[in-house]
Image (cartoon, rainbow, N blue to C red; front, side):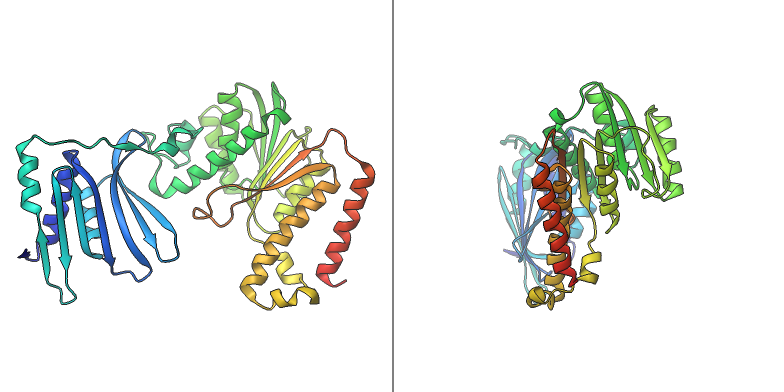
Amino acid sequence: MKTVKSELRDELSSLIIFAFTQKALKKVVLSKPDATDEIKSVITPLEISGAVALQMETFSKDNKAYHTNIRDNFQKEISNVLTKYSQINVITTVGECQFMRSKSGKEALIGDKKIINKLQGGEYEKVTTKSNNNQKNYILSGNEDFLKKLGVSDQNGRVRDKMQSKFRQINKFIEHIETIRDKLPNDEINIYDLCCGKSYLSFAVYHYFKNVLNMNVKMVCVDLKADVIEYCQSVAQRIGFFEMEFVCGDIIKYQMKNKPHLVISLHACDIATDIVLNKASENGADVILSTPCCHHELNHTLNCQTLEFVAKHSMLRQKMCDALTDALRLMKLEGEGYRVDALELIDPEDTPKNILLRAIKKKSFDQEKAKKIKKEYEETVKFLLGR
């Protein structure tokens, strides 16, 4: 063991990068973190979108794991990471190296020179870098023109780090569409995105039906934000998505010109989701896919003594109102002739807003049963609001 001078951080990061570039790095285990909510982190080489990167998986005390991909500026990024841990084990195909820092700040390193000498010798086993398996199953690759124009990917088709969650989100939404393809037309389709916002999902859905399935698509996207609508319309024109129409307006007042086959909505805020669902069902949409956002309305109006034992705790009240709101939405749609489900859109680590409400129009349904469901819905609302 030897005492290491203040240059240790750079020396250790250089060793890690050298082993990585020489394809000898297996993993780096970082323990004894400065952050009190963490347990440890593990860095491993990983192929992402055709390029080799370093992925750091951080384990927290609440039993969750978080991923960070290091794709460039390796020396700087690794150096920054090393300062946050007091014990670091570097594992390579030619041996192991251990770094330790005491509470007094004294630093020591074991085995670094041996690794460097063997790597410089040139004869050693090289690591086979694993690929990101999840990427293989994505419908979108990241190289699509609309993703570049919207800033999800760079000009090389690499999904930007800050947009990874959004990229997974829209891919997962399209996967849900794939599961109900048999409920939609095979040749021409009318799609509406209500409260479309920045329209990442809108472009992805249009691309899926138009370019992947080669269908004739008419798509209308509606939102109140004039600048966003103007920008999205210009993007659609530039990339040749000519059957996408962006409308600036209130979805309550908007009148659908054609019978909707598919109505989608991603994170329409609070009662905007209810407006979307009502508009879609009133116009007889074949399929409705909606991911709600915040749920404030019931939280503000709940007046039910029976549930006060839950409602008196603010955090539990919100969670209960979230679940009750979405359950009521599905009950209402069921009474209007839809088969309904509440599904998980994406891992809740990406976003807590991960519930997807799915409604599929039944070809025929029991009128008496529907009448009963509507009555139950009305009685439930009265119960919750104390009316």
